[in-house]
Length: 382
Ligand SMILES: C[S@@+](CC[C@H](N)C(=O)[O-])C[C@H]1O[C@@H](n2cnc3c(N)ncnc32)[C@H](O)[C@@H]1O
Image 1 (tube, protein in one colour):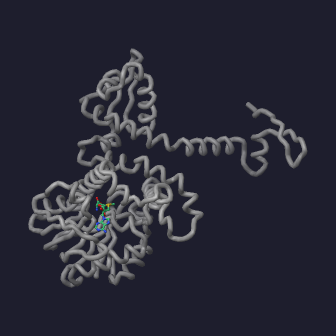
Image 2: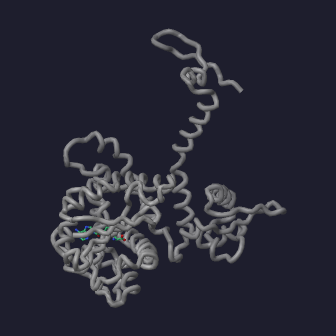
Image 3: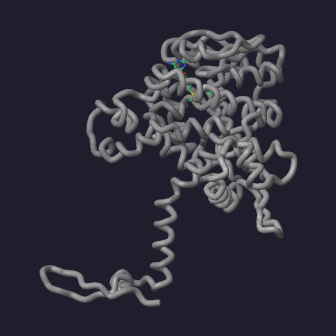
């Protein structure tokens, strides 16, 4: 079907043109233009994907579907998550998208109804799953973090250090200020970090125990609520484990047997230990700050000959797909980099950028082990 012909005015002259035809004046075929339009629509509406998942998490849909113990019907799901009968058609539309995205499996029943089953993706959003990413999802889609994007252009065009991040341009304070000031978000954030640490560091101690073997003590710098230190302590009970953290985080952390919490500032002093863990800390810092933190870590550990090292768990952009060109993995790394650009003055680094800050902090070498999804384990030697 051809496009409508419209009248437009070009440089004062009346001209008759076909919108699609004009757009195709170059090389592109009609089909290519339609595909490009669809792609742009898809991008513009792309934010609906995480927002729909957020609504599902807030409603408790992943938990309800997983707990049901078999395919769950729409009325059963509505009742389980507190959606009234009048909104069941809306819930059905939400589930249609989530099934299309692969988060649930949908089966049509001969009587016209439909039932839903879990998938490995919805499993990652079940609240009490050992690998739950639901708290992380809530943290990343928190309104103030999303709002930072509306100040991105203002920030990009600004010069000077008055507004170091788009987040600050939007809110007049850094992300860390929000965390200190708003207990509700501090809680959501710390739980998210803790859940991630519990499973990801648990995975590292199981799959790569050599990273921690032989260490007599470890301090987890910026170690959040101690979940990573707990996972390490459980796997290596002989190891002395400590967490260096800020007061508002320690105040929100549970007591953990065998893990000591030390109040302090990683820019000033890191308590001495055989090894230092930095998980998801350096990607929140610019290069200058990252070098300062690494210098404090180097002062805290013994020489390489005595087994001293810094263990970093973070993204190495371009690493982790085994050279297979895994687009989902690379895109996740690039998305995380832009996320950090919007909300912190940190960044995700490629291998050359990591090596550059290690060298600037006085370290001699590093070993990168991919294998933690988009993230890698980096062992840095004095
Ligand atoms: C992105 S979180 C990572 C938490 C934890 N390592 C994890 O991966 O779950 C960064 C942590 O660094 C802590 N932090 C920030 N500035 C710090 C400082 N100057 N000294 C000690 N900890 C700090 C924050 O409180 C926060 O818990």
